[in-house]
Image (cartoon, rainbow, N blue to C red; front, side, top):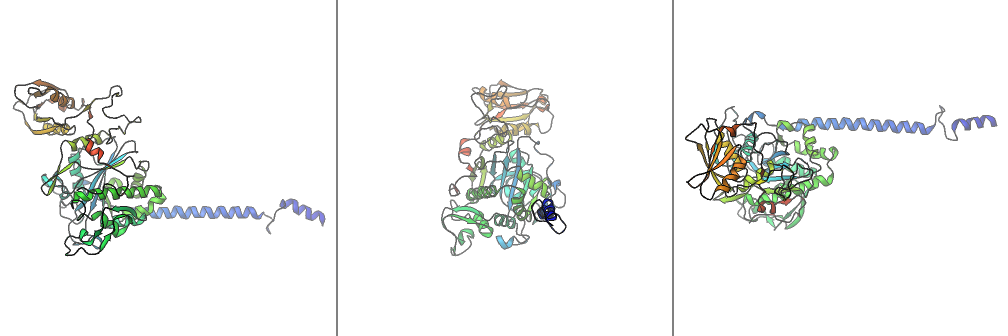
Length: 504
């Protein structure tokens, strides 16, 4: 008997055994492994189901409305157009009021430039009342409109007069305005905006003063009850929507005034998302909320594409994320673009240079116009204060417009374009009057195979030759720096939410 107990003890290794003679610890390990595998299968299945659900949520707009005449694609970062619409369809009227059958309008818009280093970004707000040129846009019946000049920017989204709006027309307008190719377009409505703020657990905002119902609805006969108290607070849902829509009674009471608060809100939302962690797990609830009311271009038309794109921006530093407004001035009740400041801003983004002159596509981050440029680097060119007239001296259609756009991007003021009397010009000639040689030579730096020539009459006149149309010999120059008042007035995403909240 004793020998039998010892043998049993040796077999068990001093541990407890099951009735089958197998160690209980091994059975627990296998059970735990089975549970873990089961959980992984369930989680994978759940994630797959969520992705399928997100795919079902996402709505895209037709790409056939995007113009064929677009700026070329660039490796210098990516440009994303974000449109906030006040459309009242699909339950949005419950949040924003108004007629649920009204046409779609863009209430706010900004162009986000994500630099090639994926560590910097700048969002440029475009006021909705800005007077711009709207190019030809596609209507619901398949026809195209005629181009419009000196038209309010937000009218582009309303082309076609449909409740869904016309995001492709707004994209075409932004590309014409900036000379930058828009890589992606995203439209967010009231409902989607409110759900996103709820999904992240609220966003911190700040009010410069107490705000009442009349500030949100100026048609009220009395000021009504208080909506917001002065100072910092966290908002979500309807309260968040009220915050970004308020404009009366704060600052100059205009739409352009509330842009500052909208920029502060987007900055605070970005800060909240980053603090929660930008992983697929943390982004999925936000994506689910957002995609229920998002309309995107086909390039972002799936959950994989959308989340991958967002994750590609996870390394952007909050301090290096800037918010500015398109250089503007009041023109009566409308907003006019300030030239050449706007062209300098677009040129900097096209060259992937930050507001302070850094080359964000370079690992060294060289600054534009630094005293020790790298070997072979082009000197910066600024046409600020230089006026030129451009004439096509060839039979090549559209050459004058192309050269005029190139000059504008470097700050030159183009006083007019036209056709030269002689149309057999081979080389581009820039005629200049007394004392204008230096200015003419600046223009010659921008235009391919151009020479400056003295003339008796004052003024600078560009007569384009066929060599300018030669695609083999493009001119490469470095644009001038962004004007200091634009760079100095920029908001960083990590700024105090109570600072710089309004114009006026």
